[in-house]
Image (cartoon, rainbow, N blue to C red; front, top):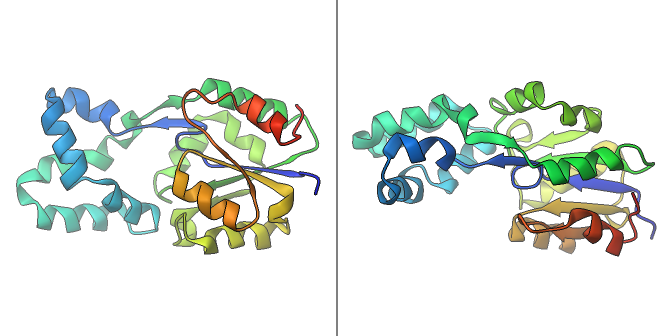
Length: 203
């Protein structure tokens, strides 16, 4: 089956986001920072905001659980923009090359509906998707729930076996593959152009 569509995750693929970019200088104590990010403001908590819970509600819930960490918890989303360090240039370059081809480009991201607009406004490359982006916080679903891939497929009338899905999370890659997508798992060392070429995608 000929590949027609390229579907990008954003965080870790096109955007470099990490709460450590803010909290490293905030704590000035790596051990304390890691404790906070592992046990207090952990990824499972943040994922609920990606699933559609408001930032305010999510913060209040965690403050009630951990009142001694209220200041740090309220700083989390108050300084979210600092955590979004930059784009990932070598992968954005591939996206730009793809935008000049006949492949259709899509985004499928776990991202809070409240914070995603900041990224849209501040990074021009998002315009290359022509609005064809499925955001978890808007849909009230997060990867690796297969329902969010079906939203993408149904909304844009595309087929999994004609699509490449690119993500940095192994669980998401595994689910996408089980749904029939061609997949590329990326990390910082991945040569995305080479991996696409292996699947027959030529820039």
